[in-house]
Length: 272
Image 1 (cartoon, helix red, strand yellow):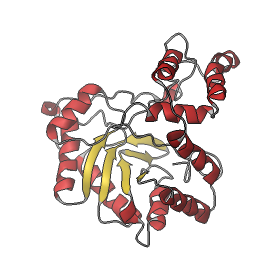
Image 2: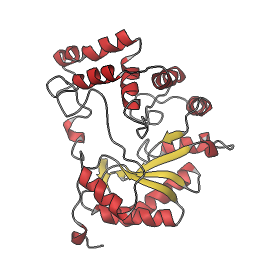
Image 3: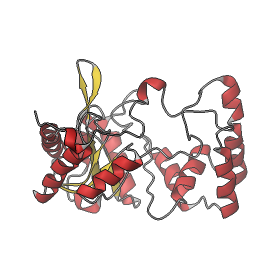
Image 4: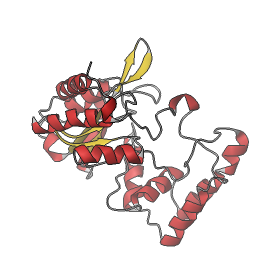
């Protein structure tokens, strides 16, 4: 994501391709992108990076549903949009099939059964292999799985953020320094500690860190390979995330309207 948008000036394309190759050479087998990253340019970048037989070494995930229209972010999950988004991603990635296709955000105007029904057809056509929702509520996840088996669910799971609370105020930054102190005692960075915490949640949990620098990538890998947490340390980190102790949020309020998204019932759908 950061290679194409959102996190400051972009790095030269060849530098980012070199980083992707470095990651794969060091054992990374899952790459995660989305059509909104750029928009579009991150998929194109990955398509270039996966040439020369490298595609076969990784599982490739991308996402649909977000688009900018007249300068505004719009979320869509209607069948025609799903089909068009998939075809466009296949073309940009220059692949015949997407391994894992996420619904990046839930269109709250379209019953989830309609959206997943179209994804099911794309699986049958060989355009995608597996599907999954992102930032969906528990009931939406269950409704999705009832139509077609889901393989993954993407959501934010940081060790220090459990709800939307004030951020970046000096008193709150000071309050959260406990996490930094714990990382120092562990001999790692706070970001490594957070990644290790996610990694220790179970074999069915896959962190998806991003970076634009090889040295930071190596640090991320070090979190998985080197930072070992005992049950007592996991409990301690959990205690940092109690509602009265956390002083941080993931997004500003303008970006939280899709949190735990629900959709209308299938009976309400009239295909326009």
